[in-house]
Length: 290
Image (cartoon, rainbow, N blue to C red; front, side, top):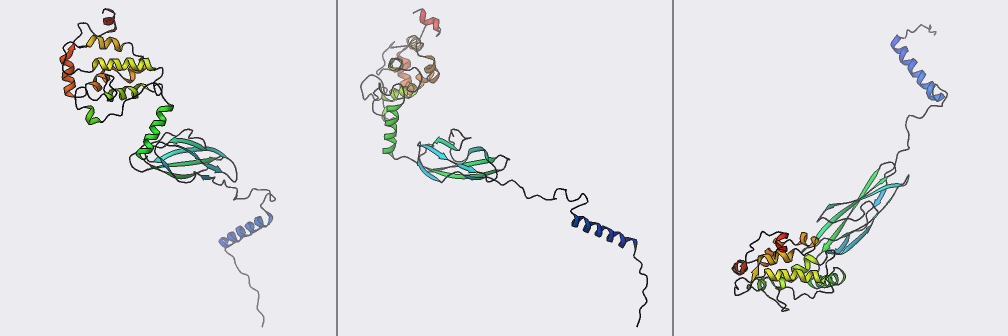
């Protein structure tokens, strides 16, 4: 049996699709119309994120000096920047936060607490990675606190080796009478000696003479018991205070001295009953007139 070959009509739309398909195949086989020199449409050269390690978690004692050593690496480049920041806990002061190695002082506290720090590294193409660590801070025992204070007093401050302080005052006993407690019997309440020491010990230029001068001013304000008429001179106190160095005045203004000495109503009453008011305006010129 024979079949007669017939003519098959192809629509214009089908012709268009066939033409597009044939051209696409030719370009794929030949590498493109420009002879195979064109760039590939996709590239696998993507920047890889850097690696970072902030270090292990730690448990430390309050007020101890802590040093952390973080690290970072980049498999396809280099580390351009380190950044440490605190993300939780009582605020600490970080030394050199843009360095892999940092230091800070653990915060003080009466209960256990945690401080979280985060290290972020940035590579030479701007990619970043972060890692965190947790510092658990535990309070010192009373024995540790005593030893730490004793060590600090021996190693810092202008007055540490020249001032012998009385026993640390008990607050209840310190306010029990107008005189308070004077354990070393030098004429000054124990609590006032401690306050003067703390306020002056770390200040620049303060020596034993400056400290003793401040104690003498405190003694001038200190009320006698029983009340002794005209035993306290407002002008003498003011003029004696003028000789105090400026940096000490900023730390311990005269109003502050009055407030710590006259810290109970009984002391205020005894002071004002013994006080001789100045007949001059309290200015530096007033002291030159006396």
